Amino acid sequence: MKNKNIILGVTASIAAYKACDIIRRLKERDLSVTVIMTKDAEEFITPLTLQTLSGNKVHRGMFDLASEEYNVEHVSLADKADAILVAPATANIIGKVANGLCDDLLSCVIMATKAPVVFAPAMNDGMYSNKILQDNIAKLKNAGYKFIGPIKGKLANGKMGIGHLAEVDTIVKETATVIK
Image 1 (tube, rainbow, N blue to C red):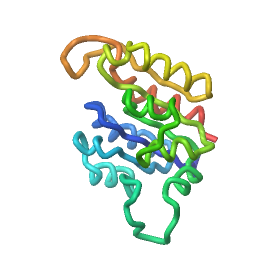
Image 2 (image 1 turned 90 degrees about the vertical axis):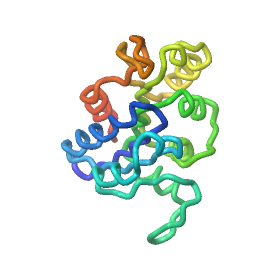
Image 3 (image 1 turned 135 degrees about the vertical axis):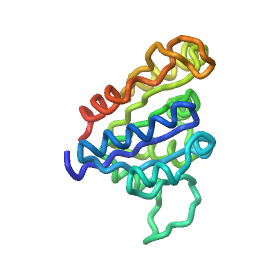
Image 4 (image 1 turned 60 degrees about the vertical axis):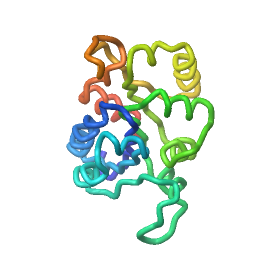
């Protein structure tokens, strides 16, 4: 799978710290990892950490100035992707994509890509079981998007429930199966 490019979307979940291990495991498979993080994800993990681990620039804002040759960033990232993995995927990003909303870099890249998109949800069990979210997941699955998890586990509030991010090994293994 050498020279394949994975876009890793990191959203605002306590599980964002697991993106570090996901990056490491993807790189062990000789995959290039480029991170796009949402603004709120920066409350949980720093761009510097993700850049250091991935070895690539971390993309954050829709209107960040280009540091190199100018490209329409969301289009060039979408074209570069052999797959997009959103891990952790919040109810917010799932809802945006399911309803065609593009108000940040990650949602724009997902909407612009022709590459397979994989979501690994992580959230409170009440949020995960919400009918609107479940309808959004069903809508995305019908459109060809893939979902990995979540699993039953300890949640941020200390309770057990469905909403825990799937195991990193499972996420990486299943993502590798969809790479073009």
